[in-house]
Image 1: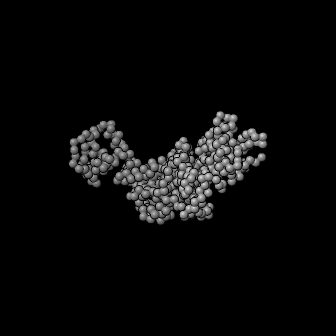
Image 2: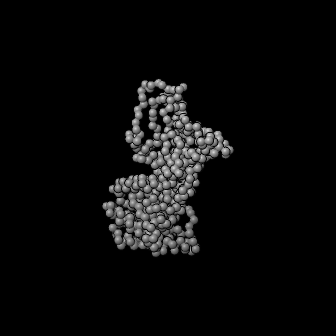
Image 3: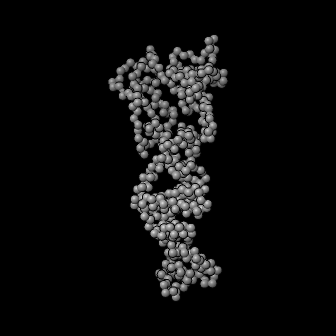
Length: 450
């Protein structure tokens, strides 16, 4: 049997995408009072209705229903966000004290207290479905959390005849009010909420759960994913493409970094610290972390070359395979190794403070500053101050000398940058880890947008 809503002007049935709710049982504690209130609310639109009755005069509370459209969202129990996120269908449950308050009003005239005044100037009327103005949401648009009770107080009195709105007066005043402007067919506040979650690098499930704990009405997780797919990710890609094209036009000296676990590679212009290229290598494409780095560098160079960028210098970490690739495939590019990566912030301090070449550093630290080598007869130092020096035959000096004069160090020092340059890339990687935490999984498009 098809049941229909008993409210005036409503024909929703159990076949529609709404939930139907029977009148309260008067036999349960407090049920008779709630039932009377339900009947009073229904009679505001159907004056002749006396309530759910059978022919012999007894209550038939379970034979009449009202649909969910006549209840505020606050009238329902909060659904489990966990169940919603994993795809379970949940039934809308009314709170025990819920009362329907949203109805279409009829055109009844009361014999007393009626408003027969004619407005001096009738407010402009328009069909919201046909002439609704589409507002462009600006970046300074502000939104507020508003109490439902305070919001409903805006509609308790007619602004023209100053009578209570639940008293059905004859009044020519009409208005259409919306709580938010529209962006296309979507409310601006909903889009703004989804965009804020993505742009702040938050987990959507946690952010929406927080709003549910505050009992703030908000969008569902499925709605967020729909916004992200249709609007947010394409918008991010469009903005990135525009910024990328603008940066490529003027920046040429580059440095490259990576996040090994994600296979994420970024190319940054070293003067302005602008990210001008990014490549993502999936772990199943190559066999090792070093191979991922090499592949990321290869793709980055191909991308920049296709965009017409002439690279003057490339600063990377000290990987043998990358050095070989740059030496054999890109001899026209000056390849440098970041000093921070080589010495971890210690050896570069010694070089800068002492002013000695690497060859002379082994002698300098034992207080020997002249050499027989004609290319470097003495240390390039300033005035020496009293200090402690390494002992020539100590174990500490022997270990340090072994590091300084190793074959790898001799190769590295020829390509060292004067100071650390990849700090900007490391800062970007820290921000990236905030936007896309390693413990969370994202689809490729979402990962790229973040």
